[in-house]
Length: 104
Image 1 (tube, rainbow, N blue to C red):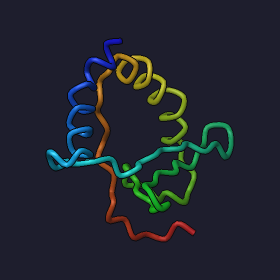
Image 2: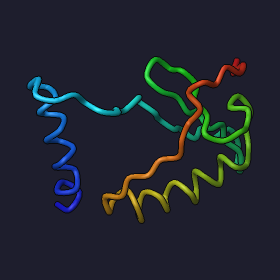
Image 3: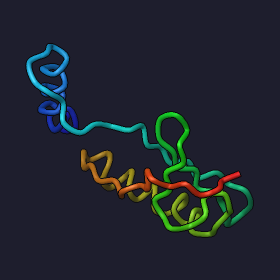
Image 4: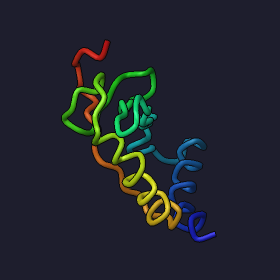
């Protein structure tokens, strides 16, 4: 219930915007992070926004497997989920929406 209470202000602003009463500031760009396991101890960290545009958070080649992605998957994401997200805290690192590297 605490999570609903913390988001009630945001919900009210979105509803007012849809009714034409106010303008919406900011927004969600569809960012998703998917650590794809390629081998024990290695992952490819697929990060993207709406339309499938690659938007990496870390300064690593997103097309290559890394041990850092494995650590994020098995340690970082569970810590973030259980200790922050379920308690209603919202914090996300900035992702590079201007990324133009080769991911093929």
